Amino acid sequence: MTRLMTPDELEAALRAIGDERYHIHHPFHHLLHGGKLTKGQVQAWALNRYYYQASIPAKDASLLARLPTPELRREWRRRLVDHDGDGVHPGGVERWLALTDGLGLDRDHVTSLRGLLPATRFAVDAYVRFVREMPLLDAIASSLTEMFSPTIISQRVSGMLASYDFVSEDTLAYFKPRLTQAPTDVAFALGYVKEHARTAAEQERVLAALRFKCDLLWAQLDALHHAYVSPGHIPPGAFRPA
Image (cartoon, rainbow, N blue to C red; front, top):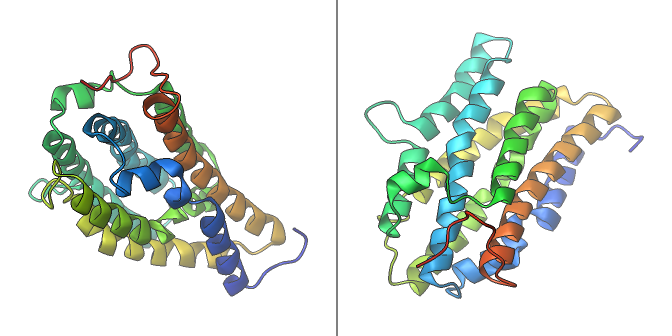
């Protein structure tokens, strides 16, 4: 890319990446919200996704430490509260554990991480490392998959409630707050990226960061599909449905 885009053109290019690469298009997602998975396969998804959810606060804390002003730090700190809670109200990590509880998984086993797919661990660790080590602009841009999350959440919740008798609105309570939290997070991150990507090279880095994040989310579902759907090769030590 050699031409500097306007901020609105940059936003359009970011949204085009989501239209092409976001994991809403992945076959495993279609199976999940379409009611085509067994309970054991849904358990495998929830158990592996826990590591991603639990790692988000660590990712955000590393980014928070690099923000240069109190105003920016206050803005990003809200994400930590959203996921870790405030000591009174549960955050997203605790709500995800309520989901795994509701699916009949042992909480100690989930939090021990012993049943993770190797690819889940590698993908999530790569994301945390990316945010910790890459320039601030790239790190913030990688969060912009949240632009697309309300649609996938709506599909997931409505589809799972309609299709599975082993889930309820209480089981899926993690998702409802994200419908309002994610747009708030996007408003800040997208505004930051549009303001601070001031050269064509910086804009290309922003686009590359979002592609990386989309690919990382896609890779996690690839691993789940390979292990638990087809061909069904579960790695040694990984969770095995009863």
